[in-house]
Amino acid sequence: MTRPFNFSAGPAVLPEEVLRTAASEMLDWHGSGMGVMEMSHRGKEFISIYEAAERDLRELLAVPPQFKILFMQGGGLAENAIVPMNLSRGAMDFVVTGAWSHKSQQEAAKYGRVNIAASGREGGYTAIPDPAGWQIQAGTSYVHLCSNETIDGVEFAQLPDLKALGCDAPLVVDFSSHVCSRPVQWSRVGLAFGGAQKNLGPAGLTLVVVREDLLGHALPICPSAFDYQLVAKNQSMYNTPPTYGIYIAGLTFAWLKSQGGVAAMQARNIAKAQLLYETIDRSALYVNRVGPAARSRMNVPFFLRDEAGQPLLDPAHPRNASFLEGARAAGLLQLKGHKSVGGMRASLYNAMPLEGVQALVDYMRDFERRA
Ligand SMILES: *Cc1c(COP(=O)(O)O)cnc(C)c1O
Image (cartoon, rainbow, N blue to C red; front, side):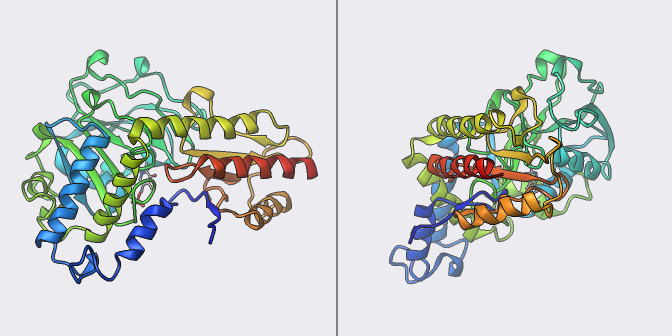
């Protein structure tokens, strides 16, 4: 059986090898007589799965020893509340570069005073505001940004160096949709979080990587199960962790290592993104509005134009509908854009091979010839 290419933004494609291994181990993991979902999280079998996952992730992302790796629940959105409940001392700063960081600052406002240090909203989220112009409050608890905006297709090519901007507060990074697609500059990070369902595994698992000195400052209202210090002290087993999600993410980490690790992934992701953006930029039919320096390697929103050259937002427009129908028939799935943006979006996560992007651009060129 050959599977179609799946461009979903999330939950998203997983490496076929991971799915095959999980399928073959579903009834009996390594001769234990149990499936992973049926194991006690405190038994030696699951502990070995957990420890391997943590070790492999630490190695893949070169996470320094002074950072804790936590496997939690609640998704990226819950972290929008969990982060301020753990780190807020009253004031927080946000750099808004798209729909996700916008959502994050709205949620954080329940737990303290939010300052928008910079925003790309006026420009329609097509660029990253220059850090030199960020207006960060003195004494802020932390500065939050989303390093890859999944909906708008905007990615930080570099994380900002807050110290160089005269700010001592930790940087909080939502890296949900590009975690493990490129290395992380940990010296610039206080905490990074991400839902697993974009690039690592199933929905329901959230990854948090947090510097030790940021533990132990939770607000009294913070639920115990979301207190980073308690979670860290208990090796993510203060309550039952999402065991199956950790197992699948662990298989993905092992797969990433077998592919040459994050540096090899990055090289592959650059080639994939280049192929798609070049196809869009060279065509008279397709358009991507994000400035080249801020374009995401992982999520590529694009529009078809109408006869007058205007981008077609409405997915139900006959030209868009025909594009999506033809794509499906060609084995290219889930290309419809996010409802708030319209048009199309191709997500090129680690598990999407270059051949998938090649099949997509072949289809796009063919569709353009026929349009
Ligand atoms: C998907 C996503 C989220 C939200 O994840 P949920 O698991 O749905 O809560 C948050 N931030 C980013 C950047 C995302 O891509």
